[in-house]
Length: 65
Image (cartoon, rainbow, N blue to C red):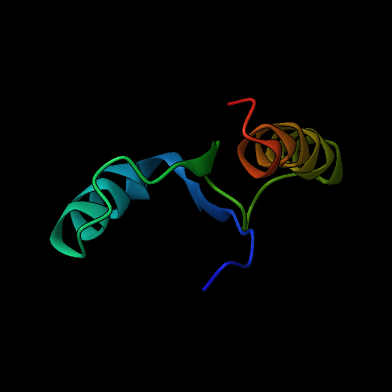
C-alpha cells in the first residue's frame, strides 16, 4: 500500500513470522525481532528492547537494513 511499516515480534515468534511472510508472498519481508518475554521483563529490560526495536525499525524503514 506504499506505507512504510515494520512488524515487531519476540524471538519465539520469528519462525512463525517468516512462515506467514512466505505464505503471503513476501518471502524476504523484514521485521524487528526483540528478546522474549515482554510481560515479565523489568522496566530496564523493556527499555533495552525498545531501543533495539527502534534501531532495527529505522534500518528497515530507511532501507538500510
